[in-house]
Structure formats: C-alpha cells, structure tokens
Image 1 (cartoon, rainbow, N blue to C red):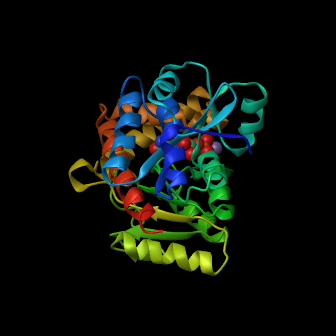
Image 2 (cartoon, protein in one colour; image 1 turned 90 degrees about the vertical axis):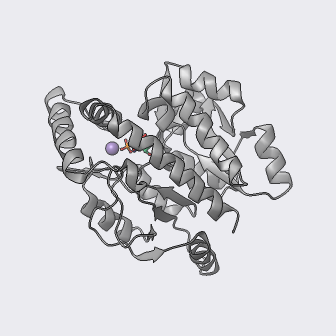
Length: 296
Ligand code: PSU
Ligand code: MN
C-alpha cells in the first residue's frame, strides 16, 4: 500500500515510539468549522502531552496520508469537497485523486497497514435504529482488523443492544474503561454490560497482548465514559435524538449521509451542549489511547 507518512510519524516509527491514529471524518463531517480544525489540532497535542505521537489519517488528492502536517490538517478542515471514506470508498477516492476523510473502519485498516496499533475516536458507527440492515462497516472492520479502538461508546442515535450483538458475532472484545457498562456517548452508561471492565491502561494492554498471543485478528473496542461534568443526561439526549431521527425519516436522508445529518441535528437541538460533550469525550479518549499505546 502506498502510504505517505509525515515527518513526525516517520521519526516515531524509526525510533519505535508509540503512535496513536486519529480519524478525519469527525473533522470533516462530524463537527462544524472552525471547531473542527481546533479539535483536530487539540487532539494531536493531547496525544503528544501523554508521550505518544499522533497520526491523523486522511486522503489528500488521492494520496493516503498517515500523519498530517499542520497546513494539511488545515486544508482538510477547510475543504468543501471531501469524500467520507469507509472501506468501500477508498478505491474511488484514490483513483479519482480526491480528498477523503476516513471513518473508523477506514482509519482502522489504514492504521493497521501503517503498523499503528491504537486508535482514538469519538463514537463508532453501529446498527441504525429501525434499520437493522444499516450496519456500519465499522463493525465489520472491528471483526477483521487487530487495532484497539478507544471510543465513548456508540451514539444513542444507534440501536445499542443490536450493535453489541453484532460485535459479539464478529468476535470483538468490548472493554469498559473504568465501567461495567457500555458508555453511550453523551451519557456515561447505556445500562448494557461490557465483556470486561479494565481500570487501568495496563489492564487493557494485557488483553491486547493476550489477543496477539492467541493469534486472533479482531480489534478490541475500549469504551470510555464521557467525563461526568460534561455528561448530557440520557433522557435529555434522547429527546433530541428522537426528534433528529424523525427529521431524517421525513427528509428521506439515506446511506452515508445519515450519521452526519443526525450529528448536526442533535447538536442544534441541544443548543450545542452535545457538541461541547463531544469535544470533552474526544479529549478523554485521546488521552487514554496514548496511555495504552505506550504499553504495547
Ligand atoms: N460518531 C460520531 N461522530 C462521527 C462519527 C461517528 O460521534 O463523526 C463518524 C465516524 O467516522 C464513524 C462514521 O466511523 O461516522 C460512521 O458512519 P456510518 O454510520 O455511515 O458507517
Ligand atoms: Mn450506515
């Protein structure tokens, strides 16, 4: 695979220092300008502060970049014509020399190709409510690519019980980081049990090493609850989510547009409280991912 590494990631690789992959769809399709650029920069800095190297993954003019130079991150955050790339979209964006933002699925597979073992994001895609056949490619990728993904759960815009079932089917170990239940993004708990609770990065690293020793090739999903002070109570989030879902149905939003549409509407309907929560949980996940990356 033809990968372009930025100077920072190249140096980290050469010295075998820990690296954390970061996705780009949340920058282009998950957050509005200019918060998206500030967030992208801030997450990279958090990873550095914990002693690891950030590698934001994206496509620029058809070239796969593992780690962006500051001006490239800016170009991506400001660009209007960015394709949201899951696994199936990568050949299109490469062939057509497009700018592309990578989802959790595409970031995982490219991180793996680049020799990066830990990845921080906000929320993973999952099974959509009322549309049990709209299953995010994120879940398939977790089943086939041995990268550890730190997230704040799956957003409650999804069907969480079905999402956890789908992860079980695909052999993905679901870890609760300091919790017994799977987090639900804006809220700390979905009430649904995880497979195992880990209270430290060491705990998680031991599971990653055991997975490797067993030669299993599924990813590990670490669910870290949003810090308490930023939590949006489940009942409050639910009101905005149900309204956004009704709007999406009425407007006939389909396919890969569904997730960005719901994210934008929930943000507007909660008077941007959900957006502030989103930033807080992203920071938290970047910190945890960097701590894990240092141990494996
Ligand atoms: N959840 C969020 N913010 C996001 C996404 C998910 O809270 O930006 C993005 C991620 O990149 C994820 C993608 O991989 O949406 C899932 O899209 P889909 O449901 O179309 O697979
Ligand atoms: Mn989908």
